[in-house]
Length: 327
Picture 1: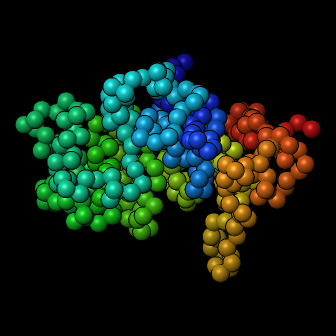
Picture 2: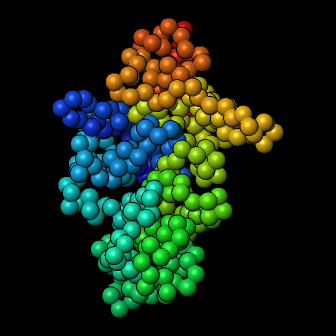
Picture 3: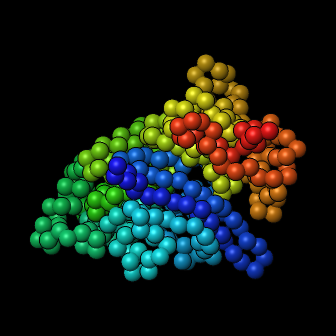
């Protein structure tokens, strides 16, 4: 049977190292994205989601961040073995990324058309005399009205939703195999958010690509994703398909995230929450990193960290918790 894996991340460790301390932002992450799949990575701020995506794109050079261990295989080719010149060919052509803040991602002194033209010429083989037509097609694809006018506008003249559509058009213009979307709808109102999510699913089917969708919003996860990886303190604590994750969460952290979502029939003035915060590196417990916040904490949780292990017969569900370890 043919290998259906598009991206396979194994044992990824990305640390931020300075003179005072080493921050283990991503500490042994494993996941696979299949062709035609949307994998969601969900967790609170500081859990390591965005650093994971930047590690995949190898965009950490201007920071103290270093990938110290692991592999990132795109169709069986380890991207960590690539030079920067080789990675420039991967970025855009094979993996594209939509960043969280479209206002800072777009150049305010270049017109929208010029920015798209630069991206397309760098990564695509569109003939120069046909490039304007191609840009108009891409802007039409993402549902931008009057694209010939928008081509001559600057980013600050557009609304948040329109800027995000431009970012999607830019990412899609090179027809990548994998799209990484890092909180692409966070700053948008719910109506525009729904439009952007539907647009991404539509383009995914038309271009036959996969998506790594990074978010803290479980509602978006339920709407978009096939499978979900829940991250906490730089580690994946649970992996499952989206239906099983919501109907039967295994890890106490996942349970807490789902319980904290507003419910239609409950008192809207009293929302549940997970006590405490994601621990800092200076306060990281020796054993399970979720132990200080866990309602089911046991003595062993403080002493030793559990492994991420399969807990079902078909090996689809994985959880990192002492509740599921053999006695």
